[in-house]
Length: 372
Figure 1 (cartoon, rainbow, N blue to C red):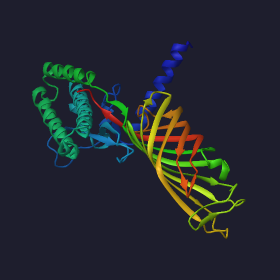
Figure 2: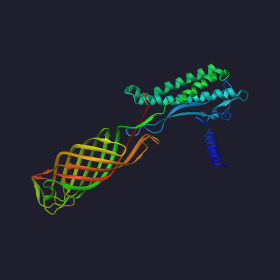
Figure 3: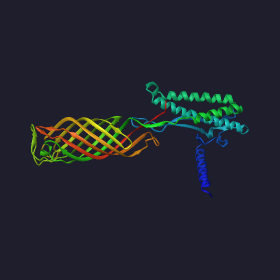
Figure 4: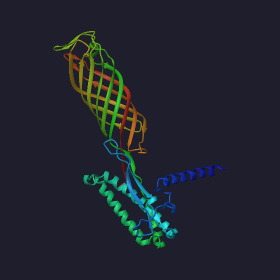
């Protein structure tokens, strides 16, 4: 057996298995290469039915997930037939009638795609009335589909008028071939969690009074590109080299207070390309120097000042940028950071710089759109 024949056999078995799995559950979903067959009409006429055939067909826009700020709903077109409730009398089963049903099936597929397109366009509309009434838009397209289906039935007499049916068939095939696929892009909104560690480097008088420990930073960042809003905590243990004070708050030599920085930053994405993101920041920080609860010393001081910093992200792994799975992308980066913390305690200038390295996880929604 040649390689080509083996591939053909595998594909044939795959399509047979797919058709069988649909048939097993009494439903046939529309695909480009799946036509209806008379074996799909398994139902029996209802007692009060007036005709000898009926195709139980539906269209919908399926929301894959629930929409929120960080995960948008993915809308996929769905066209399907319930085989156990579709029927056609044996004496009416002609090739022309089956051809009519397949044109009807294709027309439904066209409208399910059109429904998704109009809903996505409405979601992106600046008109809040349009964007918040997707169900009305959906109902309008379903009504249009029903009217076109009725026109198809009347003009072709359910396939009897073969020339009309061929015209409809060609028109529907053309519309299906011209269907546009949505374009997926990252939303300007995102959220980032970061965990980094690094040395604290003293400036001015800092080194005379305090040690330079390794410090950790835990941050959370909200972005609406190109602006970012970052808040976080950094801190670590210190060793007092020489006694200093602020009012009644005394920090004796050879004791070990903790330093904590709470910062609020606004940043601007100066560079955001495939691998790199550079964000200079400016904001405010609140520094607290105090002893652990287990120590007898209750001295505690706060210092507030303007702070600046820069983060550089090397994006080494990303997922789902084109919405292949769901409508949220995710990135993991190596984050390098530099932060300046001016700090005044009494007459001592304890300003310092914090250099960090660690990981950052960024995630956000993916938007779908169509060309205008």
